[in-house]
Length: 215
Image (cartoon, rainbow, N blue to C red; front, side, top):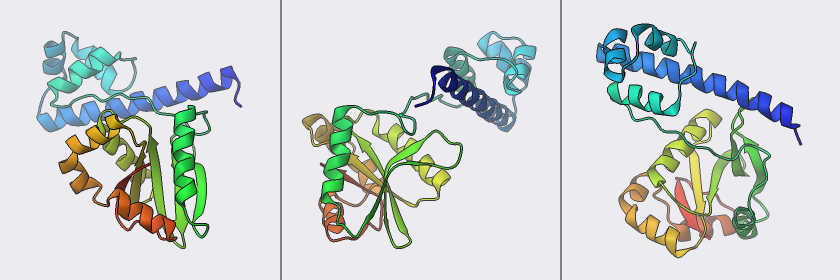
């Protein structure tokens, strides 16, 4: 287990990287919109010099200011925390993953807490493999913003080189209602049904397309 100082160092490094990525996105959006730094600064009550420093990642920017600048540039800021690789999960999350593993046929190769890529703190809860085929699993005990969740997990797919995403959610009334309300999104982004996914996994096969399984 990393020491507190080591965790702080990791967090600082990630914060700096995210600040740099945000700076680049804001600059790109401003140029694409044909706006000057002075115009953006005036809209959010900041000086041109401050906007310039923000775009170069030279000054810390709080979430409120970042959201304001992003909105002026036609963007919506999204900020969310997620479990880092190797961190302890709550009992409900562990139980959900165990239910999935209990369904999987012995012929499937199972790996837990698989990093997205080297030096990336993000990780898949589970990666299922069969030959060269791989399926990345994101386990959620309580659904909140499904579209935001999908954007996050789809980005992880891109960065990890895994094409097929399997969303596994706990079988609760809240989650069933959330899935029902998001039926159009699911049909487009996660077309394989729970029954079809679980049937394939029990038979030692992997889903050929993304889907959601309720366990």
